[in-house]
Image (cartoon, rainbow over all chains, first blue to last red; front, side):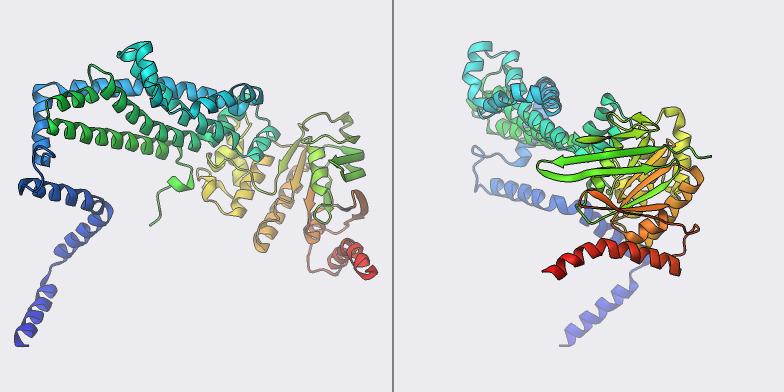
Length: 286
Length: 247
């Protein structure tokens, strides 16, 4: 009883003694945690648990190396085996495929959204091809192109084409007709209508297509590089499997996750820049 | 000073499928005249406006703008729609500038000033209130100095006080610029407050035309105003009451 009252009294005193700067620091820390820190609680907990499980021997190193081991492997790969080059090759491949497939999807989506004749001629065919999982074409693609660059570009381009095509088409189709009518009343000609009303109206949908396409892009790249490649990250993982280098395999998987996250960040950044007018993207008041 | 356009519509018919929305409407707007059109919903008053704007073509009859037959879009007219129809991806100033040559940006800023939104020129319209959005729409309609302004119930969605504000603003700009104006509204008081002449559309034809000979700005509390308003309102409602009593 006595001890408790003493303890509580000393706690009160120390609370009274805290200086203003101390309180400001705590407040800043709380704000930082609420804004940034909280997102890292779960990933860090997983990492620490993982490390502890491997170090205590619950998980054998051979099955799953510890995060520290993966990090060491990463450093070796970067400094001694020119990993940066592998990542560069993979990324360049992915982006080239995105540019080709996405470009075709964007143009075709616009044509079919704008011109009913083009839609009638092409949309049924495109929708039919869309139902085929593009990775089912891998054997055919290897027969056509072998395992060189063209095969991977073809697969990635085919994969990213559909999300961008569908979302561009829908975006243009669902632009508010009333706004288009207003544009005509106010004397806009057809190119002005497209640039000032139709394209900005379809942009949120097109950017959604881009984000979906980025996901497809990485997926296709990984599959294509793992099955048929002679350089790049997937090739590295496939080789590591042959030599039972679990640490390298895990590292490659983590790298894919980071690259995917990076692509997502870029897509979000584009959305915030291009859709600054959209109420959903305006800085919240609170 | 009058630089408004002369509008003469005669024998206008419009069908939507089997529904005859307009059946022989004759309407004339003198240069600089402000005409109010009232009627119940579905009476065809908005259809009439769309025909005069050249957004739809009549099934029979013709419209002459300063004696020239109207074919296709009416280039003399600007329309204020019930919804402001602003482009959310443009700022207020950019919205006013729609269809305006680049060298006339200053006119757009002036037009925004006239509707009292100078300070909001660079604001996104998506964060503006309903009243502010309609002010931007009004500035956009008037910046090109159109000879004919068509108002398709533009104030219908506003609250009562904002609406009276907007009515006074429209009247002031009309007195300054003397364009011809056609106001479609379901609000009889609004029509009596603004129009030189109020016409009633019922069953697809003009059922009544009343000249409003009251000095401007009109005193809504005056006996003459009230009498005129109730005369028109009774006529609008009267049709309805006859059907009720006959049941």
